[in-house]
Image (tube, rainbow, N blue to C red; front, side):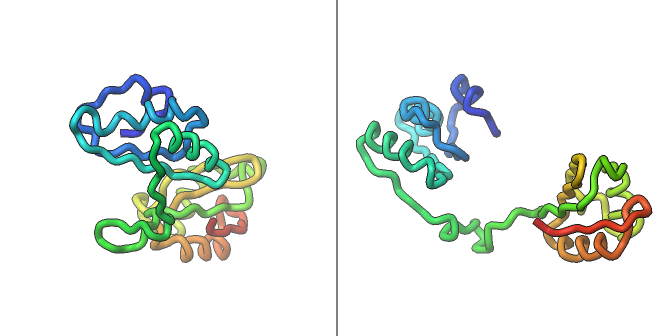
Length: 164
């Protein structure tokens, strides 16, 4: 389950084992209330906060309110249960060219599948902006797909692409 800060305030979920925060709330009391969704009553629970350097003052306030220090880990120290690297399954390719060049998501999907031979399941969300297009692709094909885009065509036009 994923919930926004506003939604999380009203949730009461039994047996919630872990809460992961992608940002630290500036108000320490609100933050503690949010993370209190786990470990209710006699239950044990885990809260993980992903903290940026500019959020460190907020963490200090939380530690003071809880009267105990936080336990810190570098992201590089975290590994999944199978011991492999923590890598997303998809990568993003940026295509230089978008709506102003009359590129549509269907044009990109057509090039990726019909012209380059990739399966639909290997292609994720395609977001077309005015001057660029972003395509989520399976991590295993990202470099090759980018090279094919640079050497191929989308909607009959040559494009430049790069993996982000």
